[in-house]
Length: 521
Image 1 (cartoon, rainbow, N blue to C red):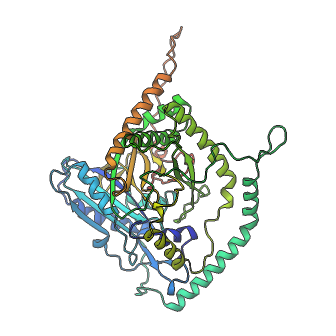
Image 2 (image 1 turned 180 degrees about the horizontal axis):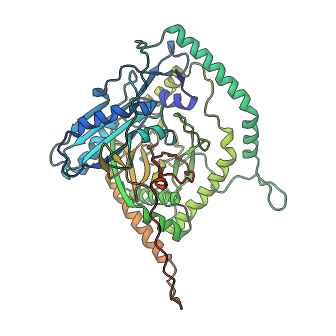
Image 3 (image 1 turned 120 degrees about the vertical axis):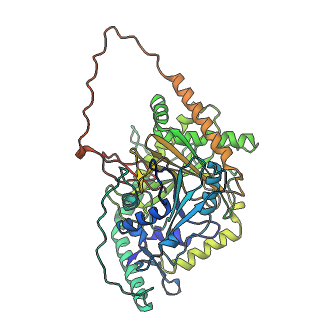
């Protein structure tokens, strides 16, 4: 058995029918030319042959007696693939809008906690002749960067795929759940281990907190103890900052990744700054058109990875920071510069404070205590009264620079589908893939009835930023001498081809030579 960390278990205990805590993705697939098979049955066979490569597919929760401690992961010896992998046919005409509406409906339902926490849906009936794959996995078992094994299991770099070695036979225990005594012993043991680890890390936590809280000295050797000019505790309220229901609306939008990189280069900002500015501009225009744009700037809740480089354990190591979206600034160029400044300051503060945030900690009676608080917050609709911490969730998942294949089909798109929350009814997650930048906008339908309107505003803001960036580009100069012709690049050898690898994170991705595959967080 494996114990859930404090952060992992929080995703379980804070879950409610109105706020499911699973993440997912929507992939549109091109079937092989001349394909006449049954792709749903091929998908079941494909996953069955690979599911042993990632423990998220084969483990389930074992709850503690009386919810006295966090549950543990145990091996499921009887996985019902007919339940976990399902077939959906869209009604005619099978438009992209219908597909996204159906994904929103699927994303609104809770996962069955008595089974491994994942589901896959093969969706056909699209008028384009393509097939869609929608997947959802519980956030308690996986974050963006921890999805290495999932991506390695599910995707290939060629249509022919890989030869997968079958799993090693294991002795069956024929036990649906662990015994009470075994679970109680595991709870006590895990609490002691968590307490010991926390005590050992206290000196590092104290030093990191001290370094983060004490201002650095300036050139004159003095410390500035004044609060920043844009310091704030809460964000302004909008129609998006309310208690949510379990109803969802989803929209996917795509822009060329090369254009986003071009904007970033010409304006001297990061790619993430361009994403933030694009969403900020879309929100500003959307709220202004509805006569509800606040005078003060909106803030985004941005997940930040706490994971050490090279750590691929299947758990959550993440925190959240609030970033200024500068929606009070009308000029898009001035707005993106302000976002760049705010982002740099936030990253600098986070780098100093990062080590002071524990990701695992003992909390006796956490399940019933946290669940009770979450239920009270949800049912009392306090989110309709309390000022919000942030207005929207924006997450940027590390990119996939290569073409992927699933069960022989070509993966065309990679739209992330994430989690709206009470007080933040809209989540915008971005996933780059093979020259594309795919935006996944998921929202509570009561708070935002048609998220497609905001998706269209997002595309319009991207085009505006591109035009302004190109206008800032320096005029080309005429060279007096001809430029020597560059030699053609050598064709990479087979050994030099990128390996299938996932290193997704809601924080700025680490630089690696390997190709990256990401599961949305």
